[in-house]
Image (cartoon, rainbow over all chains, first blue to last red; front, top):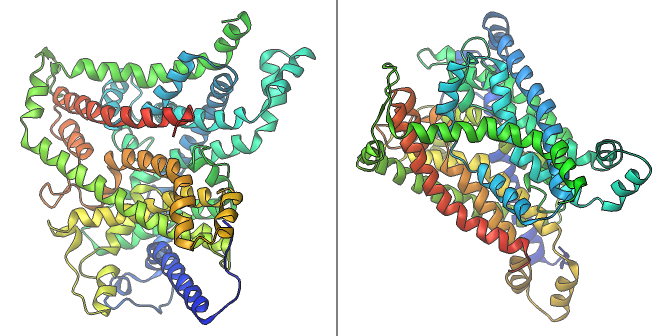
Length: 282
Length: 291
């Protein structure tokens, strides 16, 4: 937007101050719960849940040590890593290829397919969870990484396709046609000529698939047991019978959040394009 | 369809669609099929019961209560997020210091694992040592019991959802504001329009498709909320925060009534399809450039 402010009169200064104040509140509200989890995980338990809150304390790594060394948390982390890696590696190539086709050709059935995909995004997941559970038991896939990966890949296809299609639409058709005249196969033109052009898009799609897989909860809650259980489910299952559990939960929460927070701080730019499904040129 | 297109379809489209059909549409069909059967998980035999499961669900007061909880939650959360999101997007759009830092921080809650966000919010809203009540007490308000209080539990969920998902609204609308074309804005200024007039007559019409987009995505997701409910309230106290998805989960995996749970899922799908159908109709019109 064009900024219409010119001179800085006293009224302008007041508006300015109010804007800053409002932003400060927004920043505080956004950060506070995360800050609370971080400090709780570093406080001795007896200082963690007091009113008024203990603002100054001697930090201890005891809770972090406990969950990473004396609980199966490392195994859950490995499960999360397997699931996220598998999901990204399968979902992105499949999604890119489909999106390429759907961007290249226009027809009535393709329009219908695109909107069907959008509708799939809105499916009540619980409706699929039930057959997943029954079929997975029958196919002996219950509590395996493969099962979760496949489910995430399928659920993520509509998003990946819509997002990537937006990027492919921006690539002039002539590019792949020229490549094919120069002797590339259809797939070669896609992989060697078009794909490198949309690299930022691929990156954005991968980032979102990663987040989606990393954060997946409901399917994992029902479809995994001890073998394939990821972090997201493990953290939610700490009970509240003992107050120490809260400190451990906080340490676990920090463990889960840390990679995301770092990731996002570095890749903020790529988020915006993905969030808007490519509706806004970010 | 040319030979080239047919071959491309096989190479590019078919793999992805195979995965979709095998992993989403086949189970969906199976679920619909199950909804006509009486299937209690501990008893392996299923028997065909026609529409009995549907009748059961529609006569079940818990279903209607869950639907009402879900509708109230979705309406309140989406409205709150839209208003707060638009306000923050406008704030961010003015000249501010440390833009990158502020943008990143504002985005952060949205990227957090929903189950963990639920946990964080549960701590914030804890009635004894939770910080929300602590801050309220600083300004002399005695806070309610939040998640433990039947009158406030749903509001705790709404506020928690707003904390996590308002950033999505912010990002989309902020990106929209940044791409408002400059010519009409300058024209408005030349014609002596006030800031408010510019906003209502130039900026808002431009943002309308984005607002619709945000409404669609947010209400779809809010309607299906589960993770935060599971972590924050477990559907309680009583059944005051039992959303449709949570009730469906209870019916399938605690009561083990697979047939009835499928019927409930199908009914939810039907409700959603009507709503989504309408939205897609609106989006489709936009795709054709009619607004």
